[in-house]
Image (cartoon, rainbow, N blue to C red; front, side, top):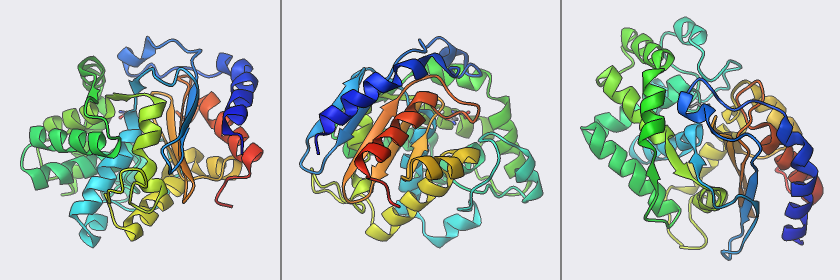
Length: 307
Ligand code: GLN
């Protein structure tokens, strides 16, 4: 298949879509990002990469980091993790408080904010302090992407924390139900820091290769997680990766994928490739407007979906 030609076609077709949607503004530092930007990269198991657009421009990966923290938690914990966080789609917005109250402080899944904060909390419990935890998360992302220079944006993390009342409320609510182990503000700050990691589509697509290939990166040959856990992470991406639009995303795109409010989306075509796309303007669910359409065009043009 001529992937470069397909990406070039998508790039041309997507241009009118870049006018739609709205960049995330509830994190003030993200509101400043120029809306009309687009990038897409795919990585094949022989290491070949194809890209279009601003594929070297870094952006805030936000909730995409939840895939990496969930992977780390699954490396450390097995079934006991599910006492703290479920694996069911929430059908609610990513930052909703309502369901958490009804369900006794147990978040539906690790990709909504409450679930991801509980995962961060479980990592801090294991590594005993939040700085060590951040170091482990950063090192893991550098390892899976074979890129030693990745880092996070202090300004974005601080900006999110300043306006982080909802995330603090989610954490406090979990604490009130006994589902929280560490200091609430310190844990939420750590969560904001891993959300503020900056990567471009080339780096993200590379980082997802181990999940596209059953836990083992086909390029470096390193195993990061067992194949059965990789299967589970892909399953949760498919069912929960786009919050209350996960069904719609599966319907239109048909790939395990995870979005972030920075406008990035990562997707796997299991056994074939990983894809990252970025366009900062979001639809009403907080998922990249043009990014979602670009992935739909990709699976339509190539026939590469899991269905
Ligand atoms: N850091 C963001 C938040 O907590 C992540 C949300 C997202 O990317 N959907 O609101």
